[in-house]
Image (tube, rainbow, N blue to C red; front, side):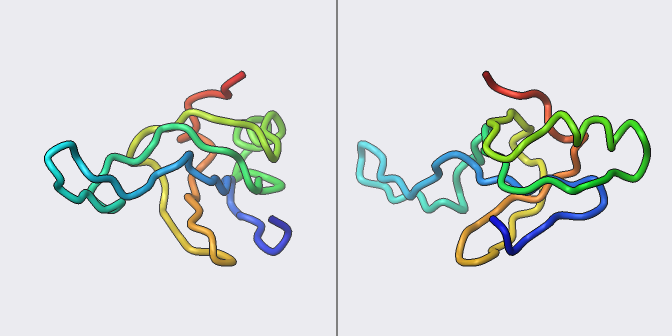
Length: 97
């Protein structure tokens, strides 16, 4: 995503598929009422962190990598028509794969 660059040791993520659901009994559950997925794909990475340790962690991450994060980590924002989650690099629990 070339039109957005996170700052201050943050990473922009696209969370894995959340969609509106209908339960077996026919109850509609909107996206906003569901738990957020804990896996996501990195869309953009800040170039530097606030300190050397944060900067070192950012250097390990790259666009396209899948990561694991806490359910309630980050801030959801709409950028370019896509819903992104912006998290501090310290909220990323690990890289998948």
